[in-house]
Amino acid sequence: MKRVLPYYFYPFVLLLVVLSANALTGKSVNTPAENFMNAVIFALIGSLLIGTIIFFYDTKWGPGKQLKILSKSPFSELKEQGFYVQDESLVGNVKEYTVMVSFNWESGRSAISVAVFFNPLRDSQYLGEEELRNLDKLYRPQGYPSIKEYIWLKNGVVGLLKYNFIPPNHDKILQTASELIEILKIERLRPISLGEVKKLPVIENTTI
Image (cartoon, rainbow, N blue to C red; front, side, top):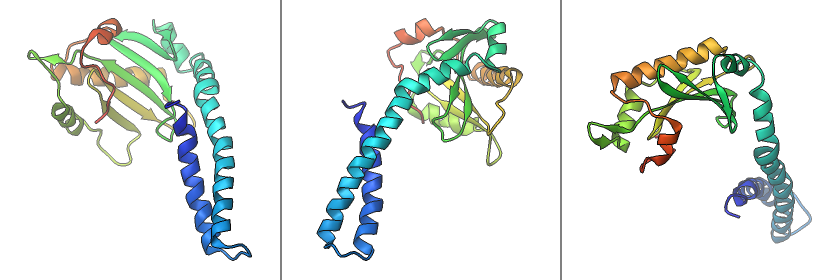
């Protein structure tokens, strides 16, 4: 229930605010209380419609689209170079580091996500939030607005390659993975497999 509620709650709040503002400030033969009740009813109906569409897209249609995307370029070229499908992503090995590539639309703009996993244990200590913030500041891509964005996690770093119509080719994806790997080597963050990632006690996909 907790996973479903946000699909309806946020559209309801947004619609209620917009409709209430219009109902209470616009001219009407009804009383403000009647206008507000009408706004609540329309917000409920609208949120049920919008929330259901978003829910099915996110849980049913979205994953299907994701798998279809993985059969096209640039993912098809990555599969030719040894990457394999796992869930809704491609997983491969670049310079001994595990790399996961997937399509991402959650940033409000189409993007290719290039995640490189590392062992968060360095100098006998796990990386903390402050160290991750420092890494984020130190290696933040220069230039604004940037089509590239780095996101540091407790067990990996993600490079987002944003685009409008034509996705970056597989060479650009591998180049991004190599750039991230060079950063990890500089910071003495060793490679780790997906199996080892799941066994680590501090693995939380929380961004800075």
